[in-house]
Length: 165
Image (tube, rainbow, N blue to C red; front, side, top):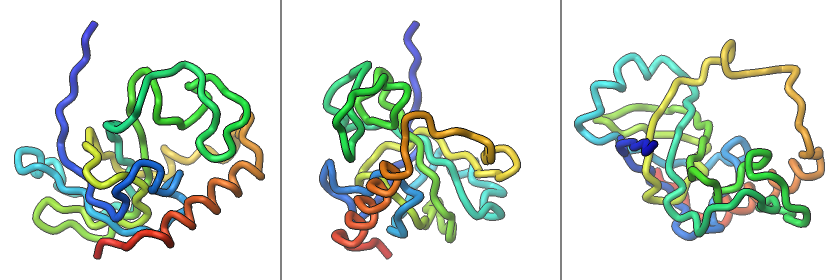
């Protein structure tokens, strides 16, 4: 079965090169924009009341498809691709959480962007804490040390790139 999706917009960020963006949006304050194409802008109605969004996008610069990959940050031991957030997936789809600051003429001004400039946007959903937060969730193989490394790499990436205002 072939499944197709339409690109609804494009991300604009200070991150131009693969390997340059923060590893996870939770650990960056980088600002950027998400441009929604005119034919989809009606879908932005009532979105301004939400503080955070879930952005679903296409990893358009993923180099290959894999079923096992080492983690991006401290990649020593390969894990099954579905137990990672790696870009080299059978279906190169990513998710990010961003803070919505403002919507102007179909442009979402966001904070916490971790996407490469020009990343195709597939969908946007409101982040609703009652639905999207699972307090008792476990981390699997991801240790506190791994999370700290991701935080540090993400903060360095943010510091080393200009912010779109």
